[in-house]
Image 1 (cartoon, one colour):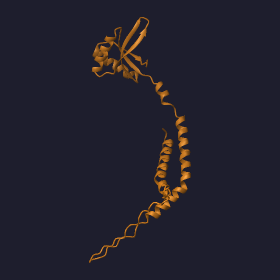
Image 2 (tube, helix red, strand yellow; image 1 turned 180 degrees about the horizontal axis):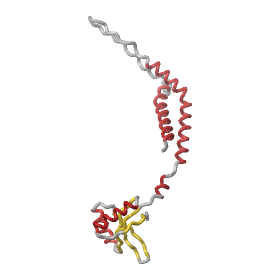
Image 3 (tube, rainbow, N blue to C red; image 1 turned 90 degrees about the vertical axis):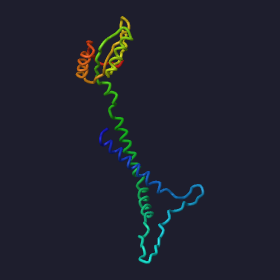
Image 4 (cartoon, one colour; image 1 turned 120 degrees about the vertical axis):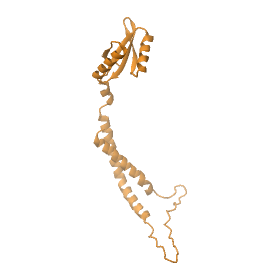
Length: 189
C-alpha cells in the first residue's frame, strides 16, 4: 500500500474518532420518552476547612462545562464538512485499492523448483521413502502421475523458489540417500 493511501486512511480514522468523541456531548440532554431534561453535572462543592492556624483556600471551580460546550458547538459546526471530507478520502482510497495490482497474478508467475528423488510404481514404496525423508526434516511429498503405462508415484522435496537452492538440496540428498535425483520445475497438479 503506498504512502498517500496510508495517510488518507489514517486521517479518515482520526476524523471519525474525533466525531465519535465529541458528537455525543453535543446531543440534546432531554429524555425523549418523558420530555424531562437530564440533570446537569453538579458544580464542584465549596469546601471550608477550619483550623486555628489558617484557613485553606481552594481555587475557584473549574469552568470545564462551559469550555466543553464551546468545543462541542465548534465540532458540530464543522462536523458536516469533516464527514464530507472523510467520505471523499474513503472514496479515493477505494478507487486506489481497486486500481492496485492483484497479488494472485504475481504469485502465479513465480517459478518454483523441486528435487525429484525417485519414482515408484508401488504407492507403498513412495510413501515409505517420503516418511524416511520427513524424519530427516525434509519437506518431502508424493505426487501421483498418470502415464500411458499406468500410475507413477514420484517422491519430491521442496519446493524452492530458486533453482540454485534446489540444486544444493539435490547434492545434499544424493550424499545422504545415495539416490540420484533431478531438479524439476514444480507443477501444482
